[in-house]
Image (cartoon, rainbow, N blue to C red; front, side, top):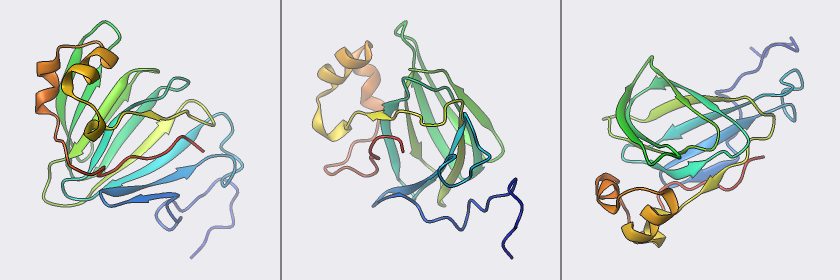
Length: 165
């Protein structure tokens, strides 16, 4: 049943705008949910082993809620700090505006996240792990190249999404 309320939106039945081998992303903003002024939501689904490669949102902070699955997330701070941790169903993660972050589904099922942004059109800038050496990536991120050894790499891009809506 479809809701007729201006305050209700069915995220699960909305077609994803970005579909890749490793997962998909659905964007919800005032473009398709008019009441959502000044904010945006993404529904991120990662296949088993799917990766959302390193990226950042220069104009928005991100609050991620894990609906299903188990993933590893790494957040790279501008002070060269690195925080890597597991995210399980029911947990939330805060990523400050402009911080580079990476997420990988390590569970036995598809992972599903709802991502909330404090900007109506969050910019989304990504870095392909398959395109750069650890030394180049470390220089971009501002960290030790050895820290990047733990990030899973694939010969092809598993899940890279283009810029925000």
